[in-house]
Image 1 (tube, one colour):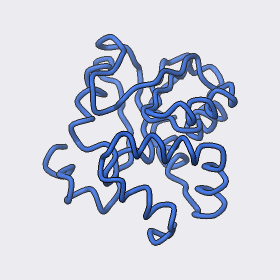
Image 2 (cartoon, rainbow, N blue to C red):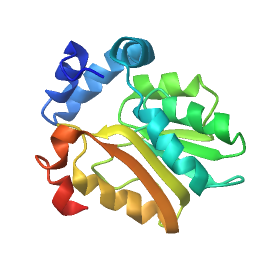
Image 3 (cartoon, helix red, strand yellow):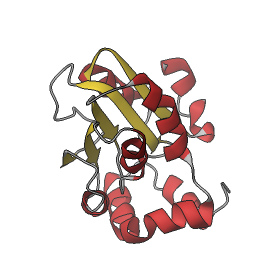
Image 4 (tube, rainbow, N blue to C red):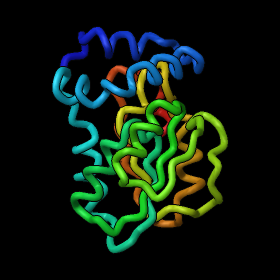
Length: 173
């Protein structure tokens, strides 16, 4: 995956501005899967699913945090069609694309930097790919994932290498 790709450069240059992020991803939603997988060579959704899938079983309840177009849920369902997956994303355009996959029990709009609209101890597993990155969601967003995870639940997420130290993930985690 090329970090010099213009789409990725634009995505990480939004500086945390929620309005700009929302507009960018709403505009990109329909072409996102093609651009990320076919053009850029993204595979973060596969890596995170490979890490979480062996840790959950049966009809476990999973939160796809920052679900985007549903790439993670599609991969999870390939491995275990009985999983009950909820998705949350900042942008309606991405949620609309995710709904087309049929992989979700529910999809809700939400900001991972704020209180999530789920009760404490709700999920058997939480997964997030491509969200914890420069100018998107910082390490403080992890606290809400921990809150909504059941005791002992696995949380699997990717953190962009350029954000790991620069945004304080190394210290926070």
